[in-house]
Image (tube, rainbow, N blue to C red; front, side):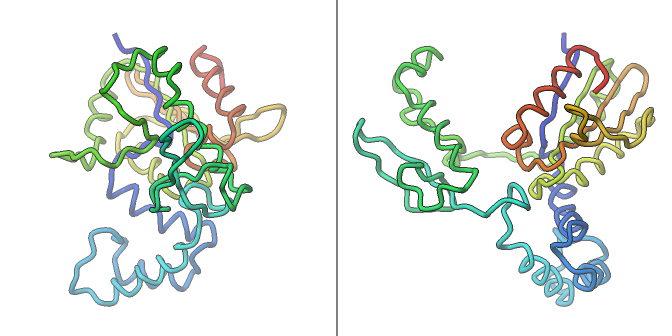
Length: 263
């Protein structure tokens, strides 16, 4: 029986999450007041499903996109990096995929070794190590080459929102923790809070800081309804996903939550 649920920077509703990106960018001073207010007025707050006949809105959204196009999609205060992933043909040679938007470059040949995302290449090396594959009982021939983000799968259906699932779950006695990096522009904490509010849970504890080593590590808000307890927590300075940037803080947050301790 399920007794708890953890959501880390979760894509939950494509409209809410994508629409909130512009509000988030404005709040973090990536989009000026004038540009944002013009878009808000022209688009009536809808920047995703834009009427193709609404030329003012189209132009306004384009202006906002120009402001953020060179900002890292994972963490607004980190450099924007290309993603390449090594495809190993043998132990001594790596063939690099040409499309820099899809994969992560090996650190041995990366020109931007200062990029924090470089560390992700180790997951590719780890996931394709023969000893690791054997330990994980990967059947030979089923996964020729493991990729962190496999974009080759052809899906026949897509689910644009799972808010209704969360509404059903809110009827159950569950402990839920939803975590967001407050510098994550891809799945913003603002969008996450919007769908959480739509669950119509009773707020039990309003916005307050939580601490690690006597320093503010983020902020939390708690909701409850008929035995369903939901804690929303931000991780200060973290991007997407939060543990990639601030492991200690996320580890301690999870440890306190899983042991029913105050975060």
